[in-house]
Length: 82
Image 1 (cartoon, rainbow, N blue to C red):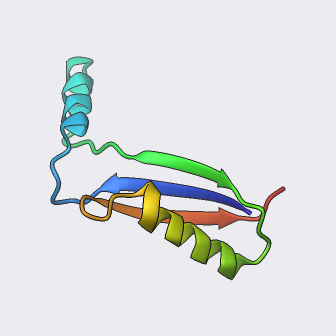
Image 2 (cartoon, rainbow, N blue to C red; image 1 turned 30 degrees about the horizontal axis):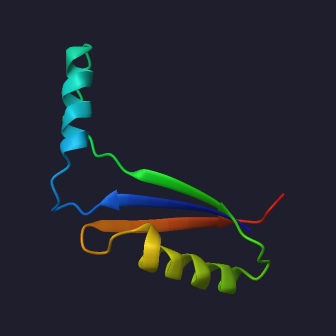
């Protein structure tokens, strides 16, 4: 299975990198961008064919290493390997 994991700051956490992106876009003429948030995408190839087991494993990976639960949220998508 292939996993795409999206990690983003919780809404109540300030995002200085997102603010810098918004300001930079405005300086380039994109003034209609009112807010920006920056996150990360993690792609994994798993040697797992059972969807339930893959979901369980990816959730544990996120909780234990890939996301900081104090300041970040995560979500993920699973797709069969091609």
